[in-house]
Length: 95
Image (tube, rainbow, N blue to C red; front, top):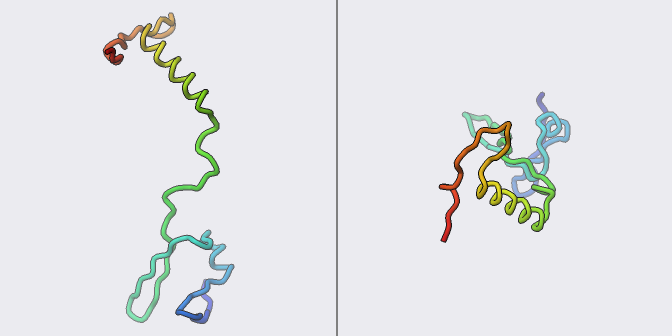
């Protein structure tokens, strides 16, 4: 795909929507600009992280309850018949 565009004010380059859509880029995305001979090469920089609205759907109370349950499990060890018993007591630090 090739199109002719104009250099805008303050040397801004505006990419046509068809190009940005084809590359899957949007306003704010980072681009790598390289000069090779008499050519300008513009490549999208891959996104490392995907923006999300939230990381988890839990509360402080829920986190504390889960933490307390894990401490109880560590203190008593694994007593389930289907699970092998592990001595987890060295993992518990006592004052």
